[in-house]
Length: 356
Image 1 (cartoon, rainbow, N blue to C red):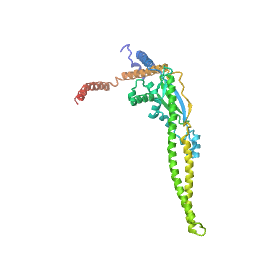
Image 2: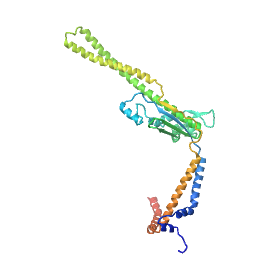
Image 3: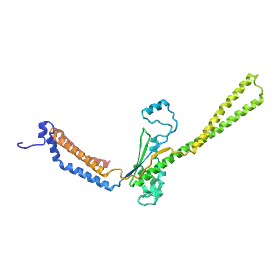
Image 4: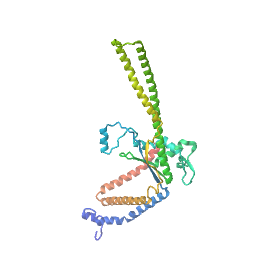
């Protein structure tokens, strides 16, 4: 047409969008480019004002390793060259990271009295602080809701190279976040110590029973040897008696070694049973964080930028289909017809579903 310029002239002339055409697209769609990010920022800012701020307290610890290792020295040297942390008989750091989510450990923490936020000097069980409207008559559901809320605010991370575990807990109040993180740390240490001592107790009971059985067997073998020697004063001139003496000695000597070994292991187990050495090394205890975990300004700006990018993608997608509609006229018209047929069939499908 004379003197008229269509949006596709520049694209047809150059075979692709010219810089002017791109600029025109932004000018034609300046309203959604401005209003969409603004609306998203207002909505996000409103949500952030409603939601309470979260403070994250962090505690750092590492598991204690046993002194020995069952791995060959050559393999340990290779692992050290590549800075790999090889197990040494103790529980792995990932085990402790998952243990803090166990029901038994968390229930013990939920029963601990902690300072009530905003009410100095008053202490309540953590379950009452996390779920203040819980029903004490239904303690199972009450503790279940508290554990769910605790796990939503609890995160752990493990450094596979150094074996350091970071335990983070988020709460609306900084002091509460630090108290819960430290309570989890104390209960984790106590829980593991109880498990270790119970295992050593079971080991001690087993060794004690086996030692008693071995001592009975040893006494019987020694009594048999003593009786035989009392009945056979001279064995030097009889090869048969010498052979019998050697056979009796072969029964006594191994039993003596077994008894000595079991007595030594029994004393070691008794010491380990009452050993209260911590099973984890606390690197950093949790302290009340001075500021919230996430800045609200960063969240709002991120939402603005993301909405702006999504709006640009939507605008260019719409322009792409608008500029190529003439080339896809047949497909476009068929899509319109099929879509209308599909929309018309929806009420029929609903009626059939109701009848069925």
